[in-house]
Length: 456
Image (tube, rainbow, N blue to C red):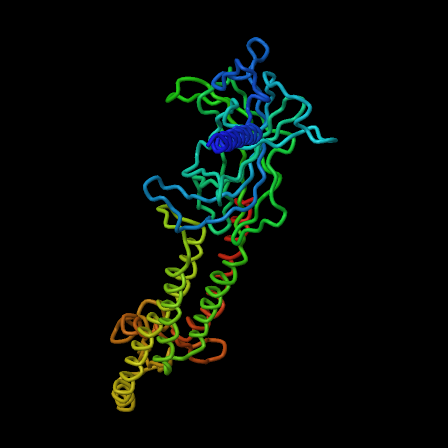
Protein backbone atom coordinates (compact mmCIF):
# COMPACT_ATOMS: atom_id res chain seq x y z
CA UNK A 1 0.00 0.00 0.00
CA UNK A 2 2.82 2.37 0.90
CA UNK A 3 4.64 1.53 -2.31
CA UNK A 4 1.56 2.31 -4.31
CA UNK A 5 1.30 5.73 -2.68
CA UNK A 6 4.97 6.47 -3.38
CA UNK A 7 4.52 5.45 -6.98
CA UNK A 8 1.51 7.76 -7.39
CA UNK A 9 3.45 10.60 -5.78
CA UNK A 10 6.33 10.15 -8.21
CA UNK A 11 3.90 10.12 -11.15
CA UNK A 12 2.21 13.29 -9.95
CA UNK A 13 5.55 14.98 -9.42
CA UNK A 14 6.69 14.00 -12.88
CA UNK A 15 3.52 15.30 -14.47
CA UNK A 16 3.95 18.56 -12.59
CA UNK A 17 7.50 19.00 -13.93
CA UNK A 18 6.28 18.27 -17.44
CA UNK A 19 3.51 20.87 -17.22
CA UNK A 20 5.91 23.47 -15.84
CA UNK A 21 8.35 22.75 -18.69
CA UNK A 22 5.64 23.00 -21.32
CA UNK A 23 4.38 26.30 -19.92
CA UNK A 24 7.91 27.76 -19.90
CA UNK A 25 8.52 26.56 -23.43
CA UNK A 26 5.26 28.09 -24.61
CA UNK A 27 6.01 31.37 -22.88
CA UNK A 28 9.48 31.39 -24.40
CA UNK A 29 8.04 30.78 -27.86
CA UNK A 30 5.48 33.57 -27.47
CA UNK A 31 8.11 36.00 -26.26
CA UNK A 32 10.35 35.01 -29.16
CA UNK A 33 7.61 35.45 -31.76
CA UNK A 34 6.35 38.81 -30.62
CA UNK A 35 8.49 40.49 -28.00
CA UNK A 36 8.07 44.24 -28.51
CA UNK A 37 9.84 44.98 -25.25
CA UNK A 38 13.09 43.98 -26.89
CA UNK A 39 13.13 47.26 -28.85
CA UNK A 40 10.57 49.38 -27.00
CA UNK A 41 11.45 50.99 -23.67
CA UNK A 42 9.01 50.60 -20.76
CA UNK A 43 7.86 54.21 -20.98
CA UNK A 44 7.25 54.12 -24.77
CA UNK A 45 3.88 55.61 -25.84
CA UNK A 46 2.96 54.94 -29.46
CA UNK A 47 0.45 57.83 -29.59
CA UNK A 48 3.29 60.36 -29.12
CA UNK A 49 5.43 61.23 -32.14
CA UNK A 50 9.22 60.72 -31.99
CA UNK A 51 11.10 63.58 -30.30
CA UNK A 52 12.80 66.09 -32.55
CA UNK A 53 14.52 69.44 -32.29
CA UNK A 54 12.39 72.14 -30.80
CA UNK A 55 9.89 73.43 -33.36
CA UNK A 56 10.89 70.97 -36.12
CA UNK A 57 8.49 68.32 -37.40
CA UNK A 58 9.21 64.63 -37.86
CA UNK A 59 10.47 64.01 -41.39
CA UNK A 60 8.81 61.09 -43.18
CA UNK A 61 10.39 60.11 -46.50
CA UNK A 62 7.84 58.74 -48.97
CA UNK A 63 8.31 56.83 -52.22
CA UNK A 64 6.10 54.93 -54.66
CA UNK A 65 6.80 52.17 -57.16
CA UNK A 66 3.94 51.99 -59.69
CA UNK A 67 3.28 48.43 -60.81
CA UNK A 68 0.27 48.92 -63.05
CA UNK A 69 -2.31 51.52 -64.13
CA UNK A 70 -5.58 50.45 -65.68
CA UNK A 71 -9.28 51.21 -66.06
CA UNK A 72 -8.92 54.60 -67.75
CA UNK A 73 -12.07 54.54 -69.87
CA UNK A 74 -15.46 56.08 -70.38
CA UNK A 75 -17.35 53.37 -68.51
CA UNK A 76 -15.67 54.39 -65.27
CA UNK A 77 -17.21 57.84 -65.29
CA UNK A 78 -18.82 58.89 -62.05
CA UNK A 79 -21.76 60.90 -63.37
CA UNK A 80 -22.53 62.41 -59.97
CA UNK A 81 -19.22 64.28 -59.86
CA UNK A 82 -18.38 64.27 -63.59
CA UNK A 83 -14.93 62.78 -62.99
CA UNK A 84 -13.05 59.86 -64.44
CA UNK A 85 -11.35 57.30 -62.24
CA UNK A 86 -8.38 55.00 -62.77
CA UNK A 87 -6.79 52.28 -60.67
CA UNK A 88 -3.14 52.28 -59.59
CA UNK A 89 -1.39 49.19 -58.21
CA UNK A 90 1.76 50.17 -56.36
CA UNK A 91 4.28 49.64 -53.58
CA UNK A 92 4.57 52.46 -51.06
CA UNK A 93 7.55 53.01 -48.74
CA UNK A 94 7.82 55.26 -45.69
CA UNK A 95 10.94 55.93 -43.64
CA UNK A 96 11.39 57.88 -40.44
CA UNK A 97 13.76 58.04 -37.48
CA UNK A 98 12.65 56.66 -34.10
CA UNK A 99 15.30 57.58 -31.46
CA UNK A 100 13.29 56.10 -28.57
CA UNK A 101 13.97 52.50 -29.60
CA UNK A 102 16.38 50.30 -27.64
CA UNK A 103 17.90 47.89 -30.11
CA UNK A 104 20.15 45.07 -28.85
CA UNK A 105 22.76 43.80 -31.26
CA UNK A 106 21.75 40.16 -30.88
CA UNK A 107 18.58 40.61 -32.92
CA UNK A 108 20.62 41.28 -36.09
CA UNK A 109 22.07 38.47 -38.12
CA UNK A 110 25.78 38.47 -38.68
CA UNK A 111 26.76 40.98 -41.34
CA UNK A 112 23.31 42.66 -41.46
CA UNK A 113 22.45 46.12 -40.22
CA UNK A 114 18.70 45.58 -40.34
CA UNK A 115 16.06 43.19 -39.14
CA UNK A 116 12.55 42.54 -40.46
CA UNK A 117 9.83 42.77 -37.84
CA UNK A 118 6.45 41.15 -37.86
CA UNK A 119 3.35 43.33 -38.37
CA UNK A 120 2.22 42.47 -34.85
CA UNK A 121 5.34 44.13 -33.46
CA UNK A 122 4.90 47.18 -35.70
CA UNK A 123 1.44 47.79 -34.25
CA UNK A 124 3.15 48.92 -31.03
CA UNK A 125 5.19 51.59 -32.89
CA UNK A 126 4.27 55.17 -33.61
CA UNK A 127 3.17 55.40 -37.24
CA UNK A 128 2.55 58.31 -39.61
CA UNK A 129 -0.94 58.45 -41.09
CA UNK A 130 -0.74 59.58 -44.75
CA UNK A 131 -3.75 59.05 -46.99
CA UNK A 132 -4.65 59.60 -50.64
CA UNK A 133 -6.62 62.82 -50.74
CA UNK A 134 -8.36 62.29 -54.11
CA UNK A 135 -8.89 58.54 -53.96
CA UNK A 136 -12.21 56.74 -54.04
CA UNK A 137 -10.76 53.56 -52.54
CA UNK A 138 -7.29 52.81 -51.11
CA UNK A 139 -6.65 49.29 -49.78
CA UNK A 140 -3.65 47.19 -48.83
CA UNK A 141 -3.48 44.02 -50.90
CA UNK A 142 -4.19 40.80 -49.04
CA UNK A 143 -4.07 37.10 -49.77
CA UNK A 144 -3.73 35.15 -46.51
CA UNK A 145 -2.54 38.29 -44.75
CA UNK A 146 -1.79 41.93 -45.56
CA UNK A 147 1.23 42.45 -47.80
CA UNK A 148 3.23 44.68 -45.48
CA UNK A 149 6.72 44.59 -44.03
CA UNK A 150 8.61 46.58 -41.39
CA UNK A 151 12.38 46.89 -41.45
CA UNK A 152 14.34 48.19 -38.48
CA UNK A 153 17.91 49.47 -39.01
CA UNK A 154 20.70 49.80 -36.47
CA UNK A 155 20.59 53.59 -36.75
CA UNK A 156 16.99 53.39 -35.45
CA UNK A 157 15.41 54.10 -38.82
CA UNK A 158 12.06 52.44 -39.42
CA UNK A 159 11.06 51.53 -42.97
CA UNK A 160 7.48 50.52 -43.72
CA UNK A 161 6.50 48.96 -47.06
CA UNK A 162 3.10 47.81 -48.35
CA UNK A 163 1.54 46.58 -51.59
CA UNK A 164 -1.70 48.43 -52.20
CA UNK A 165 -4.10 49.64 -54.85
CA UNK A 166 -5.97 52.92 -55.06
CA UNK A 167 -8.78 54.13 -57.29
CA UNK A 168 -8.00 57.76 -58.07
CA UNK A 169 -10.47 60.42 -59.21
CA UNK A 170 -9.28 62.73 -61.96
CA UNK A 171 -10.85 65.73 -63.69
CA UNK A 172 -10.30 65.28 -67.42
CA UNK A 173 -10.76 67.70 -70.31
CA UNK A 174 -11.72 66.41 -73.76
CA UNK A 175 -11.77 69.51 -75.97
CA UNK A 176 -8.88 68.07 -78.02
CA UNK A 177 -10.16 64.47 -78.05
CA UNK A 178 -8.71 62.23 -79.51
CA UNK A 179 -5.47 64.21 -79.34
CA UNK A 180 -6.02 65.12 -75.70
CA UNK A 181 -3.39 65.03 -72.94
CA UNK A 182 -4.69 64.34 -69.44
CA UNK A 183 -2.75 65.40 -66.34
CA UNK A 184 -3.99 63.49 -63.30
CA UNK A 185 -2.51 64.24 -59.86
CA UNK A 186 -2.33 61.99 -56.82
CA UNK A 187 -2.33 63.94 -53.56
CA UNK A 188 -0.87 62.33 -50.43
CA UNK A 189 -1.44 64.14 -47.17
CA UNK A 190 -0.99 63.62 -43.46
CA UNK A 191 -4.38 63.09 -41.89
CA UNK A 192 -4.15 63.97 -38.18
CA UNK A 193 -0.73 65.61 -37.73
CA UNK A 194 -0.33 69.10 -39.13
CA UNK A 195 2.80 70.38 -40.84
CA UNK A 196 4.31 71.52 -37.51
CA UNK A 197 4.38 67.93 -36.26
CA UNK A 198 4.88 65.78 -39.38
CA UNK A 199 6.37 66.74 -42.72
CA UNK A 200 6.09 64.42 -45.73
CA UNK A 201 9.01 64.48 -48.14
CA UNK A 202 9.75 62.68 -51.36
CA UNK A 203 12.70 60.33 -51.02
CA UNK A 204 15.52 60.21 -53.53
CA UNK A 205 13.75 57.52 -55.57
CA UNK A 206 10.49 59.51 -55.56
CA UNK A 207 8.00 57.82 -57.89
CA UNK A 208 9.26 55.15 -60.25
CA UNK A 209 7.36 53.23 -62.91
CA UNK A 210 7.45 49.58 -63.77
CA UNK A 211 9.57 49.40 -66.96
CA UNK A 212 7.14 46.83 -68.37
CA UNK A 213 4.13 49.07 -67.79
CA UNK A 214 2.16 49.66 -71.01
CA UNK A 215 -1.23 51.28 -71.41
CA UNK A 216 -3.61 50.38 -74.22
CA UNK A 217 -4.79 53.88 -75.17
CA UNK A 218 -2.23 56.17 -73.57
CA UNK A 219 1.46 56.91 -73.44
CA UNK A 220 2.64 57.77 -69.95
CA UNK A 221 4.76 60.90 -70.11
CA UNK A 222 8.04 60.93 -68.23
CA UNK A 223 9.64 62.18 -66.08
CA UNK A 224 6.82 62.49 -63.59
CA UNK A 225 6.39 65.85 -61.92
CA UNK A 226 6.69 65.77 -58.12
CA UNK A 227 5.68 68.52 -55.70
CA UNK A 228 5.88 69.11 -51.97
CA UNK A 229 3.51 71.64 -50.45
CA UNK A 230 1.39 72.55 -47.45
CA UNK A 231 -2.34 72.55 -47.98
CA UNK A 232 -4.88 74.23 -45.78
CA UNK A 233 -7.77 71.96 -44.87
CA UNK A 234 -10.76 73.88 -43.47
CA UNK A 235 -12.37 70.60 -42.40
CA UNK A 236 -9.43 69.89 -40.10
CA UNK A 237 -8.60 73.55 -39.40
CA UNK A 238 -4.91 73.66 -40.14
CA UNK A 239 -2.11 73.31 -42.66
CA UNK A 240 -1.03 69.78 -43.50
CA UNK A 241 1.99 68.50 -45.36
CA UNK A 242 1.11 67.27 -48.84
CA UNK A 243 2.90 65.36 -51.57
CA UNK A 244 1.71 65.42 -55.19
CA UNK A 245 2.68 63.37 -58.22
CA UNK A 246 1.32 64.30 -61.66
CA UNK A 247 0.69 61.53 -64.19
CA UNK A 248 0.65 62.73 -67.79
CA UNK A 249 -1.49 60.54 -70.05
CA UNK A 250 -1.02 61.18 -73.77
CA UNK A 251 -3.70 59.47 -75.84
CA UNK A 252 -2.48 57.28 -78.70
CA UNK A 253 -3.95 58.46 -82.01
CA UNK A 254 -3.29 55.25 -83.96
CA UNK A 255 -6.55 53.57 -82.96
CA UNK A 256 -8.65 56.54 -84.02
CA UNK A 257 -6.75 56.97 -87.29
CA UNK A 258 -7.60 53.41 -88.28
CA UNK A 259 -11.13 53.27 -86.87
CA UNK A 260 -12.41 56.81 -87.50
CA UNK A 261 -10.35 59.27 -89.52
CA UNK A 262 -9.25 57.03 -92.40
CA UNK A 263 -12.67 55.37 -93.01
CA UNK A 264 -14.56 58.66 -92.82
CA UNK A 265 -12.15 60.26 -95.31
CA UNK A 266 -12.68 57.37 -97.73
CA UNK A 267 -16.46 57.71 -97.39
CA UNK A 268 -16.24 61.42 -98.23
CA UNK A 269 -14.09 60.65 -101.27
CA UNK A 270 -16.58 57.99 -102.32
CA UNK A 271 -19.35 60.60 -102.36
CA UNK A 272 -17.40 62.55 -105.01
CA UNK A 273 -17.97 59.74 -107.52
CA UNK A 274 -21.58 60.90 -107.81
CA UNK A 275 -20.39 63.92 -109.83
CA UNK A 276 -19.32 61.56 -112.63
CA UNK A 277 -22.71 59.84 -112.73
CA UNK A 278 -25.13 61.52 -115.09
CA UNK A 279 -28.76 62.18 -114.35
CA UNK A 280 -29.67 59.09 -116.30
CA UNK A 281 -28.35 57.10 -113.28
CA UNK A 282 -30.51 58.78 -110.64
CA UNK A 283 -31.12 55.64 -108.51
CA UNK A 284 -27.43 54.85 -108.33
CA UNK A 285 -26.47 58.44 -107.54
CA UNK A 286 -29.05 58.82 -104.78
CA UNK A 287 -28.18 55.42 -103.30
CA UNK A 288 -24.47 56.28 -103.25
CA UNK A 289 -24.94 59.61 -101.45
CA UNK A 290 -27.51 58.38 -98.93
CA UNK A 291 -25.36 55.32 -98.15
CA UNK A 292 -22.35 57.57 -97.53
CA UNK A 293 -24.35 59.77 -95.17
CA UNK A 294 -25.76 56.82 -93.22
CA UNK A 295 -22.29 55.26 -93.00
CA UNK A 296 -20.87 58.41 -91.43
CA UNK A 297 -23.76 58.67 -88.97
CA UNK A 298 -23.35 55.03 -87.93
CA UNK A 299 -19.59 55.37 -87.68
CA UNK A 300 -19.65 58.37 -85.39
CA UNK A 301 -22.58 57.34 -83.21
CA UNK A 302 -20.95 53.96 -82.58
CA UNK A 303 -17.54 55.42 -81.73
CA UNK A 304 -16.19 55.35 -78.17
CA UNK A 305 -16.57 59.08 -77.51
CA UNK A 306 -16.67 60.58 -74.02
CA UNK A 307 -20.23 61.80 -73.34
CA UNK A 308 -19.47 65.40 -72.48
CA UNK A 309 -21.56 68.48 -73.20
CA UNK A 310 -18.97 70.64 -74.97
CA UNK A 311 -17.63 70.34 -78.53
CA UNK A 312 -14.61 68.08 -79.05
CA UNK A 313 -12.09 67.99 -81.87
CA UNK A 314 -13.60 64.76 -83.15
CA UNK A 315 -17.02 66.45 -83.33
CA UNK A 316 -15.57 69.06 -85.68
CA UNK A 317 -14.17 66.31 -87.90
CA UNK A 318 -17.56 64.57 -87.90
CA UNK A 319 -19.29 67.82 -88.82
CA UNK A 320 -16.85 68.48 -91.69
CA UNK A 321 -17.30 65.01 -93.19
CA UNK A 322 -21.09 65.05 -92.89
CA UNK A 323 -21.30 68.57 -94.29
CA UNK A 324 -19.26 67.50 -97.33
CA UNK A 325 -21.54 64.54 -98.06
CA UNK A 326 -24.66 66.60 -97.41
CA UNK A 327 -23.40 69.29 -99.80
CA UNK A 328 -22.93 66.62 -102.49
CA UNK A 329 -26.49 65.48 -101.92
CA UNK A 330 -27.75 69.07 -102.10
CA UNK A 331 -25.78 69.56 -105.32
CA UNK A 332 -27.62 66.61 -106.84
CA UNK A 333 -30.98 68.19 -105.97
CA UNK A 334 -29.93 71.47 -107.60
CA UNK A 335 -28.74 69.87 -110.85
CA UNK A 336 -31.89 67.77 -111.03
CA UNK A 337 -34.10 70.85 -110.76
CA UNK A 338 -32.05 72.59 -113.44
CA UNK A 339 -32.36 69.55 -115.69
CA UNK A 340 -36.14 69.56 -115.31
CA UNK A 341 -36.26 73.22 -116.38
CA UNK A 342 -33.97 72.52 -119.31
CA UNK A 343 -36.09 69.61 -120.53
CA UNK A 344 -39.20 71.78 -120.28
CA UNK A 345 -37.63 74.49 -122.46
CA UNK A 346 -36.35 71.97 -125.01
CA UNK A 347 -39.77 70.40 -125.38
CA UNK A 348 -41.50 73.83 -125.66
CA UNK A 349 -39.31 75.46 -128.38
CA UNK A 350 -40.27 73.17 -131.34
CA UNK A 351 -43.93 74.26 -130.98
CA UNK A 352 -43.13 77.98 -131.20
CA UNK A 353 -40.50 77.83 -133.94
CA UNK A 354 -42.74 76.76 -136.93
CA UNK A 355 -45.19 79.62 -136.26
CA UNK A 356 -42.46 82.24 -136.43
CA UNK A 357 -40.93 80.73 -139.58
CA UNK A 358 -44.38 80.80 -141.27
CA UNK A 359 -44.79 84.50 -140.52
CA UNK A 360 -41.35 85.20 -141.97
CA UNK A 361 -42.16 83.39 -145.24
CA UNK A 362 -45.36 85.43 -145.73
CA UNK A 363 -43.23 88.62 -145.78
CA UNK A 364 -45.32 90.36 -143.24
CA UNK A 365 -42.23 92.08 -141.84
CA UNK A 366 -38.57 92.40 -142.52
CA UNK A 367 -36.86 90.21 -139.91
CA UNK A 368 -33.46 89.14 -138.86
CA UNK A 369 -33.31 85.63 -137.31
CA UNK A 370 -30.64 84.81 -134.85
CA UNK A 371 -30.01 81.75 -132.70
CA UNK A 372 -29.21 82.35 -129.10
CA UNK A 373 -29.18 79.53 -126.65
CA UNK A 374 -31.27 77.19 -128.83
CA UNK A 375 -34.13 79.75 -129.30
CA UNK A 376 -35.11 81.96 -132.28
CA UNK A 377 -35.87 85.64 -131.78
CA UNK A 378 -37.49 87.74 -134.59
CA UNK A 379 -36.33 91.31 -134.83
CA UNK A 380 -37.64 93.97 -137.29
CA UNK A 381 -35.21 96.35 -139.01
CA UNK A 382 -36.58 99.89 -139.28
CA UNK A 383 -35.10 103.26 -140.10
CA UNK A 384 -35.09 105.71 -137.25
CA UNK A 385 -36.64 108.99 -138.25
CA UNK A 386 -34.16 111.21 -136.43
CA UNK A 387 -30.87 109.98 -137.81
CA UNK A 388 -30.54 109.27 -141.52
CA UNK A 389 -28.67 106.13 -142.50
CA UNK A 390 -28.93 104.67 -139.00
CA UNK A 391 -31.10 101.64 -138.39
CA UNK A 392 -32.39 100.17 -135.20
CA UNK A 393 -33.58 96.63 -134.65
CA UNK A 394 -37.03 96.66 -133.14
CA UNK A 395 -39.69 94.06 -132.73
CA UNK A 396 -43.23 95.38 -133.08
CA UNK A 397 -41.97 98.97 -132.83
CA UNK A 398 -39.82 98.47 -129.70
CA UNK A 399 -36.70 96.79 -128.28
CA UNK A 400 -36.77 93.01 -127.69
CA UNK A 401 -38.14 91.84 -124.40
CA UNK A 402 -35.59 89.74 -122.46
CA UNK A 403 -38.31 88.20 -120.30
CA UNK A 404 -38.98 85.53 -122.94
CA UNK A 405 -35.37 84.29 -122.77
CA UNK A 406 -34.71 84.64 -119.03
CA UNK A 407 -35.74 81.16 -117.93
CA UNK A 408 -33.88 79.50 -120.78
CA UNK A 409 -30.68 81.47 -120.25
CA UNK A 410 -30.57 80.23 -116.63
CA UNK A 411 -30.29 76.58 -117.65
CA UNK A 412 -28.47 76.61 -121.03
CA UNK A 413 -26.49 78.87 -123.33
CA UNK A 414 -24.24 78.74 -126.40
CA UNK A 415 -20.50 79.22 -126.12
CA UNK A 416 -19.58 82.18 -128.34
CA UNK A 417 -16.12 80.76 -129.11
CA UNK A 418 -16.96 77.15 -129.96
CA UNK A 419 -20.66 77.41 -130.65
CA UNK A 420 -21.26 74.43 -128.39
CA UNK A 421 -24.34 74.42 -126.25
CA UNK A 422 -23.62 74.61 -122.52
CA UNK A 423 -26.10 73.12 -120.08
CA UNK A 424 -26.11 74.51 -116.57
CA UNK A 425 -26.43 71.25 -114.57
CA UNK A 426 -23.63 69.61 -116.51
CA UNK A 427 -21.34 72.56 -115.88
CA UNK A 428 -22.17 72.46 -112.14
CA UNK A 429 -21.21 68.76 -112.03
CA UNK A 430 -17.93 69.52 -113.78
CA UNK A 431 -17.09 72.36 -111.39
CA UNK A 432 -18.07 70.21 -108.37
CA UNK A 433 -15.56 67.55 -109.38
CA UNK A 434 -12.79 70.02 -108.54
CA UNK A 435 -14.40 72.30 -105.95
CA UNK A 436 -15.50 69.59 -103.49
CA UNK A 437 -12.08 67.87 -103.21
CA UNK A 438 -10.32 71.24 -102.93
CA UNK A 439 -12.60 72.41 -100.11
CA UNK A 440 -12.21 69.13 -98.22
CA UNK A 441 -8.43 69.18 -98.51
CA UNK A 442 -8.41 72.80 -97.28
CA UNK A 443 -10.46 71.64 -94.29
CA UNK A 444 -7.95 68.84 -93.62
CA UNK A 445 -4.99 71.21 -93.94
CA UNK A 446 -6.55 73.56 -91.42
CA UNK A 447 -7.82 70.88 -89.03
CA UNK A 448 -4.68 68.85 -88.37
CA UNK A 449 -2.09 71.64 -87.92
CA UNK A 450 -4.37 73.50 -85.51
CA UNK A 451 -5.13 70.33 -83.56
CA UNK A 452 -1.46 69.34 -83.34
CA UNK A 453 -0.45 72.83 -82.30
CA UNK A 454 -3.05 72.97 -79.53
CA UNK A 455 -2.25 69.49 -78.24
CA UNK A 456 1.47 70.22 -78.10
